[in-house]
Amino acid sequence: MQQEMVDELQLYIPHTEDGWFYVKMMSDPETMAYNAPWFPPDGCIPAPESEWLELQKSWIGKAPERFYAYLQRKSDGVFVGDVNYHHNSGQDWCDMGIVIYAPERGKGYGKQGLRLLLDRVFEVDGVACLHNDFEETRNAAYHIHKAVGFRETGVVDGIIHLEITRDDYIEGCSEKRNNTW
Image 1 (cartoon, helix red, strand yellow):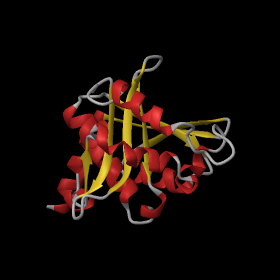
Image 2 (image 1 turned 180 degrees about the horizontal axis):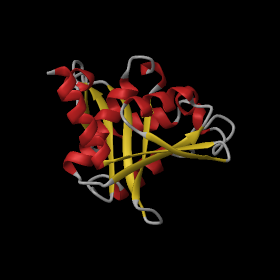
Image 3 (image 1 turned 45 degrees about the vertical axis):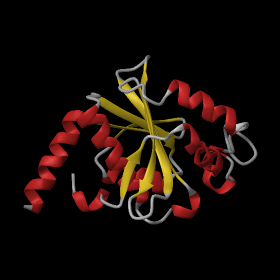
Image 4 (image 1 turned 90 degrees about the horizontal axis):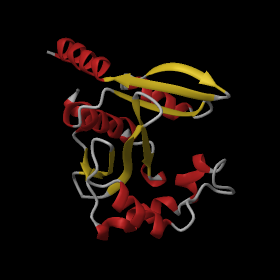
C-alpha cells in the first residue's frame, strides 16, 4: 500500500446519528445517476431513511460477512462517500460497492476509498476474494479498479466483472514497496 494515497481519508463506522449522510447521498440525483437503470428515473433510493435503519441492523458490525463504512476526510471530518462488501453465498467471493458523493468527485477519493476497503478486506477481515461488476460504460469506475489491482474476469451483457484476491493484493503491495524503497 502506498501511504500517501490513503492518508487523506479514513474509514468511519457510522453511528445512528450519522444516517443523515447516507440519506443525503441516496437522495442526490447526481450522486445516484449510475443507479438509474434500477431505480428510474434518477437512481435515487426510495425511502432512504428506512433503508438507513435496515442497513444499520444488517450491515454495521457484521464483518467479515458484511461491512459498511463512510469515507471520511481526516482534515475536517467531512464524509465524502461510502464503501461496503458482503459475502456472495452463490460464489466464492465478496461483492463490494463504493459511492463518492457527487460534489466530492474528481479529487482522487474513489481510488483512496478502494485502497482503504482493500486494506480492511484483506488485512483485517481475511476475505479471500473481492468482486465488483458494473456497466462497461462506467469508464472512471473501471480505471480506478484497475489502478488498485483489480483484474477483469469477463464481460457479460455489457457488465464488466472485476476481482482481486488476497494473494494479488499482497503481491501488489510487495511490488510497490520494492519499487518505492
